[in-house]
Length: 286
Length: 273
Image (cartoon, rainbow over all chains, first blue to last red):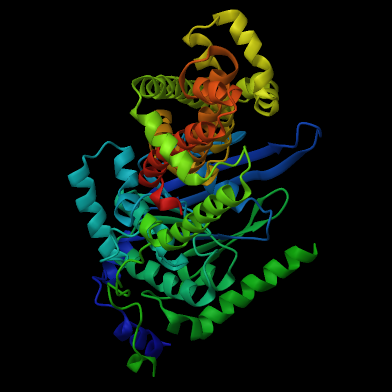
């Protein structure tokens, strides 16, 4: 196992990587996101009286600098959970705290990366990346300067004046990621960000995300339906059960970082993935 | 092992920006050969048919063009063209403001849509011509009637397109803006308006075409000024050559206004096509 780790370190980009001590210190920051007994129901159509119990009594703490992935069968409310933390939809009961304060709406401490990318088709890459800063009233020169730095970070230097439709799906989501990072949030909320991207590109994007996260240690809440992705990226995997959505189990992923493709070939990775699969399979039949 | 393998993600710039793909511009010059040839063939056919068949309703094209030149040389004709143009510009401006505002309100607020939808749809499909006597009763022979006819012809298609445009703005984009903390005003200005521009402009261009029709219809049937009055007068004299000459003036007018609208459209919605 040590061999593999060494090999993976050699092949990693020369990104500044915190040593083990600072990593350990960094990953035990205070609670960043706290959910206490959060429930959410959706009303059915006007014609029907049925309601969908999307989330039931969710309690969860995400610490600073932690990378959390959320996985579960479709309909388990994982996207609802993320949208509640983002402040995009209200919740019925319980408490949602971000940095100790109740969430009442979107805030500058959080940024969302969307599955559909949600780029403005009339705006260039530069304008799209700068959009979050623009909503905050940052003057053009300043926001474009910051946007250029992030465009470089996600590997899109030279594409600043392109329109989104001239970019591949993977490149579009790089823009989405840069836009989120540009506002320098404490928390990155990622809603199946690579779900609409083909498999090869998806793998590259996962490595890119790990590389970037390596030196911009945001707290990440990442919703996915891919088991490999959930295990590869996370410090902890939240496994949710469907209808009503509940936290079924929280699985620690003690794999060493930095992680890469080599990580997926280790016994440890496979073991955790199989464990996750066993639990998901049981849930599907129940 | 993997240590030797090149890492595609290691570089900070994994993509080589090739020159940006450029949209082939819908340039007039590129369409011209076919259009020009078609126009030439049609004109020749008309000229030959006019000369050989000697029909009273089909004067040769050369005669029409000669009449066109004569007409354009007359002070009174030029005054009539100006009067028509004036009605068109003012009537279309009213339609534009009214259409955009009402359409936007209907698109944004379900209650407004519910209240007005039936009227807008009814008036869009109703043959507007039957309303002309009503306008005549209200405004008499004045400019009010001419402008009303232009507005009634043009406004409803602008309303409906604007409403549809606002209603079909991708909710994912609005949600994205909200997630970044954008205010409602910011969302309208920076997301809703640009996103709805292609459909709105399509409505504006359709409205402009209908405004030209409304202008001529009103002038021919009621007010007897402008190009419509000229056409009606020559028609009653069975001077077909002059009727066609006036029609040509109207066609040129319509083509020019459409060209202006196209220029504006291209500028505003280059990203969309």
